[in-house]
Length: 243
Image (tube, rainbow, N blue to C red; front, side):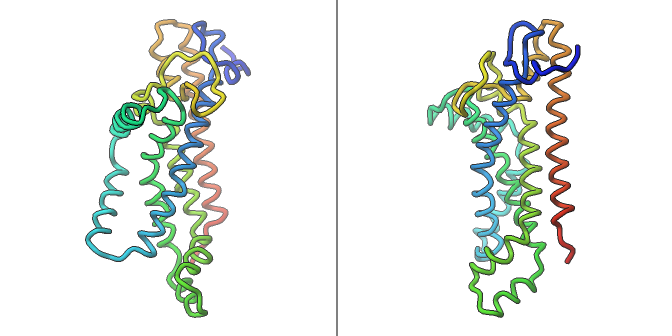
C-alpha cells in the first residue's frame, strides 16, 4: 500500500503487487509527443493564415465556424474517426501510441488554433503599424514582430490542450490502447496503453488488489495534469505583457 519505484518502472501484470505504470507512462509520452509534433506547427500555421493573411469572405467564415464547432465535438467522435480511417482504411498498427497521438492531435488542433488566434489578436495594432511604417513586409511583420510577442499565449494554450489530451480515455479505448500489455514500448509504433486507459483496465479488474493500484494511478495522472497546468500558468504570468 505504499508508493514505491516499482509503480513507475514496472509494466502491467496479472499480479497486483507486480503491476506498474511504466508502460502506460511511456505510452502517454509517445502519444503526447506525436500529438505535439503534428498539432503544434499545423495549428500555428492555420491560425496565422486565418488571422493575418486570409481574406475576409464567406469561405473563411465557414472555416472559423467549423473550427469552433470541432472544439466542442465529443472525444468519442474522434475515436470513431480514428478507428475507421487510421486503423480501418490506412491499416496502422492497433494499440500504437503513434495512432493515439494522431487521434489526440485531431482533438487538440482546434484548441491550439483558437488559442493562437487569441494570442495574435492580443498584440496591439500599433506593433504592426510601426513595423510596416519602417518598411517591413507583411511576412516580416508577422513572423519577426507579432509572433514572438504572441508566443507566451500560444505556449499556454498548447500546454492546456495537451493536458486535456493526456486525460482523454474514450478515443484511446476505441483504437485498442486498453489491451493487456506486459512490455514497456520502445517506440511510438509498439503496442502500449496510456495512463487513462490503464486506470480503466485496473478499475474494471475483479481482483481486489488492483483497487490500491487504481487509486495510485489516478493520483499519478492528477499529478501530471496539475504540473502541466502549473507550467502553463507560470509561463503566462512570467512572459505575459501588459499593453
